[in-house]
Image 1 (cartoon, rainbow, N blue to C red):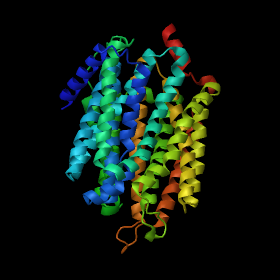
Image 2 (image 1 turned 135 degrees about the vertical axis):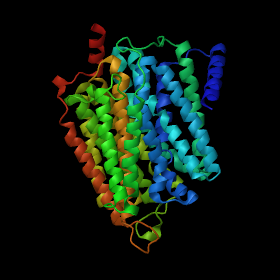
Image 3 (image 1 turned 120 degrees about the horizontal axis):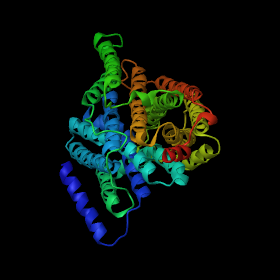
Image 4 (image 1 turned 90 degrees about the horizontal axis):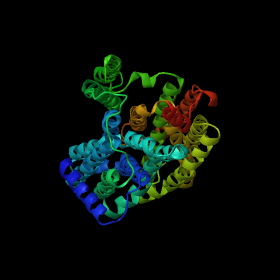
Length: 500
């Protein structure tokens, strides 16, 4: 399937070049690819209650349609980052986009057939497109002039959050108008356009010929590390998901979580000994690197918890005493302010980063997220409250995520760009997966016997306040990061690489 899709896209790209339509600019292709992947990640969120009823599964099981994407992305991203550094980022980006097209087609077919397992498999295949992000960062660093690099990196970083917010906002109206199948059909079309652009980009633009990095030999992939990482993530998240059903102190729950942590330790041990590690432990050392990655993980837990909670709360029937019984369309419109404010916050974050430093921009986002989530936990009695707090969360998202790319790239050499941004993307997706599952578990645990599994309002209050505390944790971690004197921004780092 992927070979066929790639062949079709290559044919279309060839026809585009022959038609005299002109060159395909690099930056629009990178932004389009990043947008398609970010949309795919969250587009199912407003429809999770519909999927739950359609497939006759529990709320945590329905949340796996979000988690499966994130898990696959977390495993594939470091592989894609390393392959991009070794073999060329454009090729890797095209392969990841082909996975997004194929996964969208599979999910659309399975959804039409009311086949939960097939839809879940399609979502996992879509998640393989997570490798687009390190590839995009690598191409941006390779092709962007030094004076423009900071803005391009901020735009790509913000696209992770902007696309996620847009996915939530547009999904509701699309589901009401055409059904859940069209979520995946639309993604297939967007990914196909980005794939054509990625394939045409190498021939009709100034993208340099792609060869292996001279700083690294061509070595085999660390498949053992990839398998250990996948097993560790699945075990921990499965234990969290099923803990309420099996019992938090039961042998299966403790075995899965403990086994996942043990596998994670084995993964680190393997990476330390590997000549060609999937995740280079050196990229996790030092205040700048370790602090940035830790802040990324924590803020992602907080942000994706909120993104999961808001649609669920809004669509809870009003008979429960606290929900609004909102349709997917109303839910999507409710989240439009979040998407718009995220778009506005991205250039503001770049402006703050350029005049102060990237950690200041991150702190603004983390502090705003903490305050907004705390307010939402205390007062959530009307749609207007959700619209206002959603807008503030959009600003928080934009500031926080737009600053991360600059922090990561400013701490590594040019030949480490793909691997370093890959690690950071892993932590975003892992944090998102953990946050969405924890939010679902906290809410469902509040359900009282005899209520048909309907959560209590206190469950949402607890979950929102827990997300606020998590955001405070991200703010605290940011103070580990070195100050402006010890931070080498992307532009200065690029200049240092060139001079060396």
